[in-house]
Structure formats: C-alpha cells, structure tokens
Amino acid sequence: MADAVSVVVVFFLVALSSVPICVFAAAEGSSTAATNKKQQQLLRFDRKGEFRILQVADMHYGDGKSTPCEDVLPKQFAGCSDLNTTAFVHRMILAENPHLIVFTGDNIFGFDATDASTSMNAAFAPAISSNIPWAAVLGNHDQQSTLSREGVMKHIVGMKHSLSQFNPPEAKVIDGFGNYNLEVHGVEGSSFVNKSLLNLYFLDSGDYSTVPSIPGYGWIKPSQQLWFQHTSRKLRRAYMSKPEAQKAPAPGLAYFHIPLPEYASFDSSNFTGVKQEGISSASVNSGFFTTMVEAADVKAVFTGHDHLNDFCGELTGIHLCYAGGFGYHAYGKAGWARRARVVVTSLEKIEKGGWGAVKSIKTWKRLDDEHLTAIDGQVLWSKGSAGSRRKKQIGRV
Image (cartoon, rainbow, N blue to C red; front, side, top):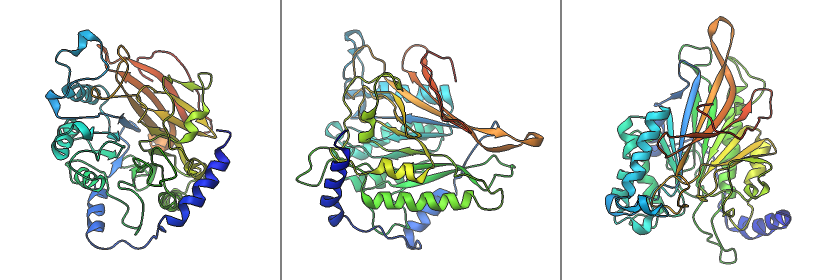
C-alpha cells in the first residue's frame, strides 16, 4: 500500500492514452427502449420502510448435478454438486424475502460449463422462479465457456425478472459490459414516492489485464469512472432539488466482482468478519476508491472473488465488504460454511406516521448450515453517524 501513489501514476501514464473517452449524450434507438422497459420495474421501499438486498457471490455454476463440489468435508462429498448451490439460493430467498437479489460475478465457472446459456439458466433459476427482481455483474470466469463477456451480459439482460443492463445508453463509449445503476424510490403513497432514496451502482471490474506490461486481474477503467461521476452528480441534483429537497446526497451502494486494492488496508483489529487469504485485486490502482470518496454518496462497496474472505472494514467513510464464497463448485475451505450477505436499508419515521429519507444501512451474513445461522451483524451507515461494528452471533439485526 505504501507504493499506491506511484502505482496510480504508472497506471494512468500507461492506460489513459489508450482508453476511449466516455461521451454522454441523449439516448437513442433500441438500447433506450430496453433501458426504459427495465426502469418501469421500479424498485421501492416496502410499507415497513425497508429495502432488503441479498448478495450472492461466486456461485461458480457448472453443469448442475454432474458438477461436483469443491473443498467440502469428506462426509459431505457424496452427492454434493451445483444443486447444493441452487438449494442454498432457495433457502436464502425463503429466509430473507429480499426485494432484490444481486449476483456479484463468477456466476458460472466457464471452464466447467458445457454451454454458457444453459449454465446461466440453471444458476439464476431460483431468482427467476421466486419472481423477485435481480441484477448481476460479471466476474473473471463467466466468459470462459461458449459465450464472450458481451454475450454473457446480453443473455443476463434478457432473462426474466433481470434488472441488469448491458451498459448505460447515455455513455456512447465505455469499457466493459454491465455498467448501470438502479434507483430505489420511497414508499408508495409517501412524499418521497418519486424520489430515489437509495442508489445502487453496478460495474464491470473486468477479468484480466489487457495491458501486456501489467499482469494480473482487471480494474475499473477511467471511462467507467467518468460514467459513475456523471451518474452520481445527476442523482445528487435530483435528490437535493424540489420537491422534498434534501441537504445531502442520497446514500449509495456499489457492487462489482474484483476487490479494490484498498481492501488490503485492514487487519483483524479494524474489520468485522474474517480474512483467510490475500486480497486478489488488480496489480494497479485505478483510483476508483478516491473517485467514490469524492462523490460522497457511496456508503459501502460489495465484492466477491476472494472466497475465503467475508469481512467488512471502513475506510474514509466507505465500508469495503466481501460476501464470502457462496457456490459449492467454487474453491472454499472444508468445514467453513458457504455464506451470503444481506443488506437492509431502513427509512426514518416522520410526522403523521409517514416515511422519510434513509435512517440506517445494516448488514449480516447467513451460513449454509442447519439453521442458516446469522453472524457478524453491523451498522454500515446511519444518519448522523459514521457507523459501528459488533462481533457476535445474532438472530437478526
């Protein structure tokens, strides 16, 4: 981390000259129609003033029943397959009743998926059958079967109940596939019914470096950061304008696959959860964390990629969180349960029993054990507070 500044300089000298400019313009054509169709499926807080998100990281789905589990106890191995992953998704949906399910990449493990479309159809089937809206981003393995990254994202966008978008129509040129945002509006009938109270950002963190002199994984490029800045400013203006003009931006959450280099800033004294492997970020720092700090709306980032890490740590007002490995065909640790992360955003009560702006954002994880044990409950953000941590087993936050 001591060399972060020099790394940033090297990266921008190498990459900026070859990265296309991100141009924002009025949307046209069929991509606009597709986006408008998805935006008609408005996300909003429920009558209890809550919005629940289930994060599923690294399913690594292959060919279903014929694809064996990895890194489970000997007594668990017989009959263990991708179907265990499917069963876990079903259990989590029943336990948490989320308003949105977010799949944060490596949804399929391309090398072991005979047909990418078939594998994705099976992997996302529990979300589809639940009739719950869902969104997805790409990891570094999704494109290693019969479809390119572009093809994989197009398939995901076209699936039932998917709110995923191929790319923002207003960005004429942007790196990656699956950069988009979703708005969560206020409770039906409230004064915030037409305002986004929670903003969700989804980005393609890439797969592997395409710059010969830079080894390792991909990163969030300048064109994507320009789109994020543009979108954040637009959402801030809308939120801080009449009617119901607010004094500060609405909180935001960001979802992508590969962790940022800043995830390496923590140790066991300043995070909640566990760190059991190294931080497999890109070998360069593209500066996206600083971009988010400057935007001042993102309160937490959620990634996958490193299956044996499930911690959340706060840095400069932003929580950096892993979900922990979910899929049974993904590498793991025998005896260490697969897990999922839940995030619940709650609104504040205002006079006459109505609902106002966001009051708090909380999170916990559930283990795929007999009781779907909930662990590591913590407050990521609360109005007028920097958040707090607590390390203990919980029934529910």
